[in-house]
Image (cartoon, rainbow, N blue to C red; front, top):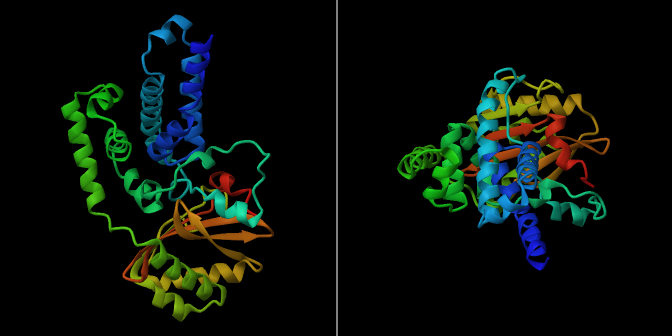
Length: 305
C-alpha cells in the first residue's frame, strides 16, 4: 500500500509542471487546465497493471499532455479563422500582488492560473511570438528550450526522429531571435507608470511622447465586448484612441499590476476588471500594446481586490 500511495502522490505532484507546459503551448489557462485534466483522466483510466509498467508516470503524463496540446493547436488554427477580431493569449496575474491588496480568497477553489510560474517564457511578447510557430515547432521549442526535455523524449511526443525535432526547435528559435530583447522590469515599470498617468489625465501629447511613432496596439474582445477589430498603428492614433476610451468610460480605474510577470495595467470599472494591457518597451518608448478585453480570458483576474 505504501508503494501505491507514493506513486499516487507522485502522479498528483506533476500537476503544476503540466499546467506550466500546457499554458506555454496553448496560451490559454482554460485550455491548459482542460488538457491536463484530460491527461489525468487517461492515466486513471489505465488498468493498474499498465500503470505499474510505466517507469516514470511524470514522463508519461508530460507526453500525453503535450500530444493533447498538439491536437488542440492544430484545431485552434481553424477555430481562430472564425474568431471575431484579433486573438491574443490569455493574460495571467501575479497572485501575490492581489493577496497584498486583500483581493484573493485563500479558502476559495484552486485556480490553475496560480500554478503558472511567471518568467520570460510567459511574457505576452514571447507568447505572441510562439503563436507565429507551427504546432510542431512550438511543442519542440517549448519542451526543449524552456523545459529542457531531450529531443529523444520530444520525438516520442511528435512521432518524429530526434533529428527532425532538433530542426523544428532550431526553426522556432530563429523566430524568437528576431524579437526584441526584453526590457528590465524596473525600466518598463516606469514607462507603464507614465502611460497610466498620461492616460488618466487624457494628456495626448504626453502619450504620444511615450509611444514609438510606429507603435502598434492590438485588442482582443472576442466579439463579446466592443473594441477595435484590427490593430491600431502609429503612436498618435493610439494616443487618440486611448483618450477616446477614457472619455467613453467615466469611472475607469487604472491599476499598475504584473501581467504575465511583466509590468502592465489593469482597468476596472465598478470593481470589475474589464481590460488587461501588456506592453513591449524599447528605448524608453512603448512599441506594442496588447489589450485583452474578452471577458472569458479575464476569469483569472476576477479575484482582483
